[in-house]
Image 1 (cartoon, chains in turn cyan, blue):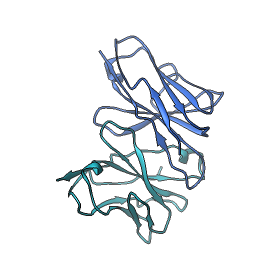
Image 2 (cartoon, one colour; image 1 turned 60 degrees about the vertical axis):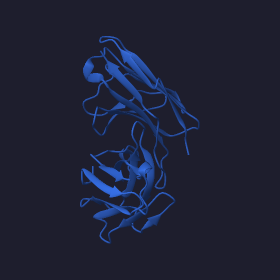
Image 3 (spheres, rainbow over the protein chains, first blue to last red; image 1 turned 30 degrees about the vertical axis):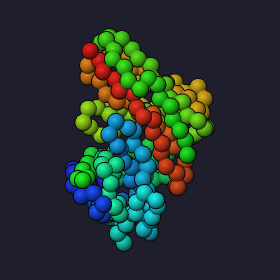
Length: 113
Length: 115
């Protein structure tokens, strides 16, 4: 399985942008980059995903490097509710094994008021 | 989207006993999975629940310890058998559909404490 590397933790001030990095140097051509987050005492929830182009949705933006070996999840204005563990996961939807998610350690985001 | 109801949400069990966790989805889904999250750790996949056939277990997990049923496309159970304190974890059900632009959905988890 292609692996991802994320910082263990990051800190942000409320209402400031947050850039969460992820390295995936062994990514394959059919791997999609997915981000999930896990709020305290909850199951993970989907945030965003992309293949090559940058993506935006109501929760966040995903910036993907041109060589696809790294990506950055961008929260435009962090709120206290965004404090969570963020997981960057590679998923190959064309491979049966890609239907299951392999979780790494993730980044614990702390948001200061 | 898919809404997952997982029961029980938490339980405290005696060692040597078994607990069955239920996962109910509000729509038919292709893929169902069971994960374990040990205290302070990330999620680890236990198995893929296959409809009408035996589950597919990941390395380190065996059917005798974690029997799984999936009688239809919307329901699955995970049993944690002959429990020991090391089984104290959060157990999560997850579902997804096949395809490049699909997302996974997770239940709220079952927090199990074995005493």
